[in-house]
Image 1 (spheres, rainbow, N blue to C red):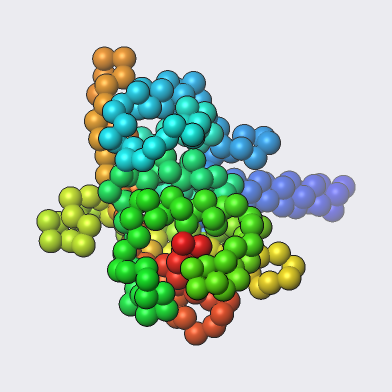
Image 2: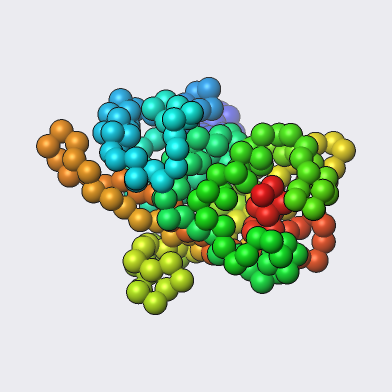
Length: 258
């Protein structure tokens, strides 16, 4: 009887410990801040999100900075970006779903990617930055899944899948000073590993390292209350070592699809 009772206690202890482990997760570093998803794997957009999006989409077109006549911006599938963290979650979701419209909604009209010297050396026609218009064209190509030719006539295999192995915030959000490369915004440093699958015929491209992200907010009125809407205004590419065909820095991957 004693042995039987003792066994039951041991089993109970194992069950309790197992439950605690599942509740708290493993002790390793969380590779990403996950997007909240529903049972079918899609981001959850609440009625509040939809109402806030509707208010923002009625704002002047100058806020968007591009011709959106052909895009269904009213049917966003991502939660409303009322914080820098939500912008980053939407950024990750837009890439993983390869959704150009959602990515455009993330970007501020003055958005720019600051490129590394290595990228400028490899792609002399690109210049030191990519603006919002260039990013729009790049992501239409990148997210299309189609095999393309770059301006030099070289083959660029299509991307069939994009996944984030790591997307981990390294520093708190801080205000950028007036003399910053992207001034008067909020910035944070993220460690990333971005995997771009080119199908069975070609190797997977890997982007690893740090990206410095910048966001800004704008006030708008919703039901008599002042709310904030955040957009990404810039990225500073600090990734990659450029030592192999499969491992590229972030700016060079973008430049492939220009």
